[in-house]
Image 1 (cartoon, rainbow, N blue to C red):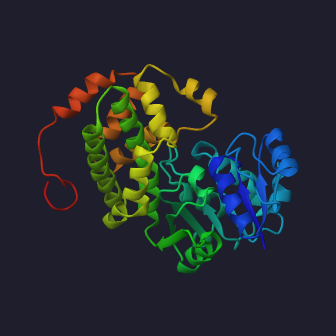
Image 2 (cartoon, one colour):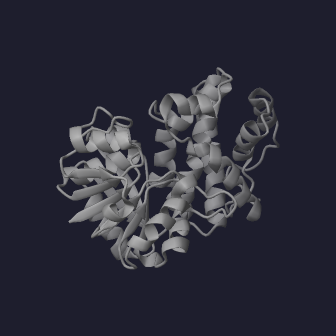
Image 3 (cartoon, rainbow, N blue to C red):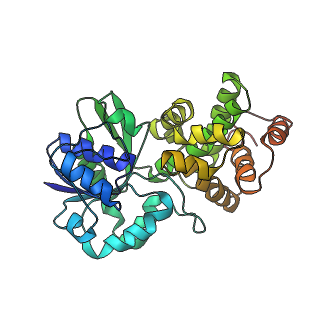
Length: 337
C-alpha cells in the first residue's frame, strides 16, 4: 500500500510517522529542500518534530506527480490559506475515486467554505472525502501517548477506511456523519485558544480561562447548529476535546500566540521563532463572517477579530464582554431566546 501526505509541517510529519510505523509506504510532499534531504538521508524532519525518527518507508519529495503516483489514499495537511492552491496543483494527479482526507482546521476567507468543502469544489466526488479532527497534538502523537480523534465523512465506508489506516492500539479513531460539526468545531476552537492565551497574558487566572472555554463552546455550538451540524458533536472529540487541549497545552501555538499578543508581540515575531501558522488568526475573521451570514452571535470571536484586525486594546474589550447583558446560559440553541 502506498499513501501520500501533502505538506511536511508538524501534523503532516506526525501522520507520516504513524503511517510508517504501520509499514505503509508513505510519500510526503515537502517544499523545502533541506526538509526533503533531512527526511530521505537521515530520517528526521529538521524543521518540525526534529527529535522524531521517521520510519525508512517514509520518503519526501517536492514532485507532486511523483508523490501522488499510485497513492491509494491521500491526506492533505496544508495550512488553511494554502489548501485550495495545493488541491488545485494536485488535482490532475488524483483519480476520481481515490479516498482523500483533510486534517487542516479552518474556514476559507471570503468564501467561508470549510476545508472539506474546498476539496469537494476542487476535486469533486464528496463521497470519497473525509475530515479529521480532535485533541491530537503532533508532538504527543509521535510519542505514542494514548489519544483519540474523530473522522467526519459523508460516506460510512470512507470514514471506516481512514479509521483502518490511522488507528493503532493506543490511538483510537471514531467516526461521525456530522462533517459540518467536525469542521466548524476544529476551526473555531483555535479562536478560543488565542483568547485564553490573551487572558493569561493579561494576568488573569484559571477561572477566566474556564469562562472563555465554556462560553466559547456555547457560541461554537450556536454556529454549528445554524449551519446544519449536530450540537452533540460540540461535546465530543472535535468540540470539547480539541477545545480543552488547544486552550490548555503548552504545545498549542494558538494559545502561545495569544500570550505573546497580550504582551505586545506580533504574528511576524511568532512565525520567525516557531515557523508555524497560527490558524486562529485567519479563523477569527472567516468564522465571524460565517456567523454574520447565519445571524449567529459570537461575542468572543468578534472581540478577538477586533483585537487582531482593528488593533483594539484587549483590556478594554475584556471589560466590554463582562458588561454584556445577562441571559440564559444556552441561548440560541433552541432552549430560550
